[in-house]
Image (tube, rainbow, N blue to C red):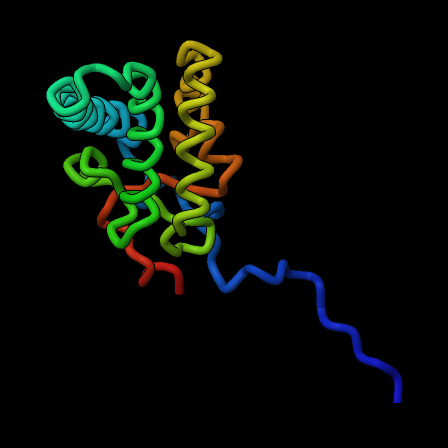
Length: 167
């Protein structure tokens, strides 16, 4: 009996409707660009408060002996914050939640911690080396996606969109 090969017409990871094929008229991506900007500002305020608290604790407890950590804390803090919240149960940072946004994968799932970590590192590296100019890419595509979103396969959508729409 001849060996039967699997059908490769559809990718193995596809389980129905892909987020990449979303209809732009259903409200999934309405106002994403400006809402993600405001969400980022909220997150920066939260991170600034955490950083200042850690900086004061450093001065009080270590007497400034760990001055090198003062420069490393922000980078580590930003990546850990984004990774923990985007990779966690809510799939959104606090700023994103305040603005009614959440992240999804191309399969309508929640991103894992590794995917959130890569997203966060790419985001902070890209804005560091391009002075934030790379974020203008989001203004020129219909879904408000940045380069780091495209590379990691993440979509930022309005929170009212649920995985129940995937079917």
